Image 1 (cartoon, rainbow, N blue to C red):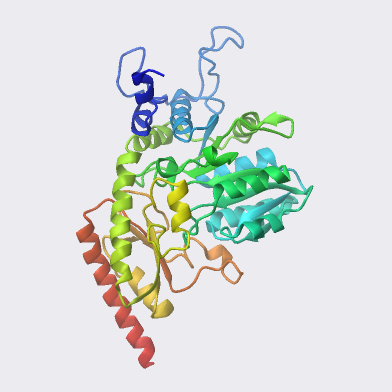
Image 2 (tube, helix red, strand yellow):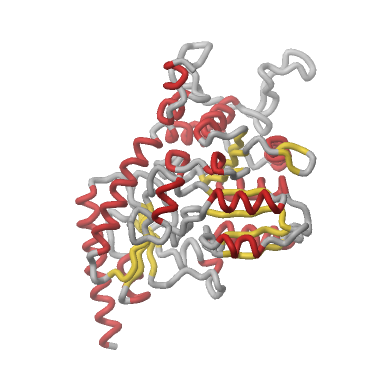
Length: 403
């Protein structure tokens, strides 16, 4: 491999150039947005560059798919209208009625809702497991029925760390597929396909878009044969037949965001690490969850399979639910919102916002927990804002104690 070829394989260079070649017609540095529903044919079914109808293919979407697939070291990628649409398409592409899923218990509430309430009606069962316990994962496999293992790592919102290689070995032994939700880590920090996963899913709404201005999702697959066809064939057909594709405007915004992912993630990680260390010293906080802390039970594993620890910090309050609620409703720079991964900081009361679908179940999120999506602002300003929230939490705790 020449020096130039090695250079073109570095992450930040691929993020800018893979699938994003200048427009061959005009020389425009940024590829145009192909805002079209259909394409002229040169004869009946004689297509120009393979494009017929934008549900099947669109140059803007195809460029973004190539860009993200390259960064995930994948075989093929597919962009969808939302993260849940991407997950749904993958599940429909590979599962059949009667199949069983081993499902990471700590993960996005929307994924749990999708699998339990939608796919459950079509004969898909699942067993939730502790993502950090490989023996529990293996024990949950049902020989002849388990077709899929699904894990999110780091998990949402408890930031558990799963051993991706260990999960992959269990999946392979069962003849099943391993899917990893890589939304929190992003391919800048972690590439699950290189650790044995068969498919990766993303909410591209989050860190990939990076600016809270686009909705999208993606599936990236390895070169794997399953049930008579490749994963690329199965997911590609589902994308076309199901039709929940990402539009060209959304793909343009996601591709633009992806170009600066590496730069942004470095700042997200450094800010989150500083805030996590600061929170450890606060009496109002009983637990700080951040994989970058040496006290985190998954720290060593995260360090071994990732290039960093991400921009999400979760914390639990000594003053209980009242303190957590007061904190979440008192910060200013940390705006109260269900999303994450943008350049701006956000705070989420996960129990009733992102994970309301699991209230009253064993998967319920602690009521004294809030999740911080740490942005790229000046970290001193963020800490000052958190100080305001902690003061509100202290006041709420005193009210409860005096009641």
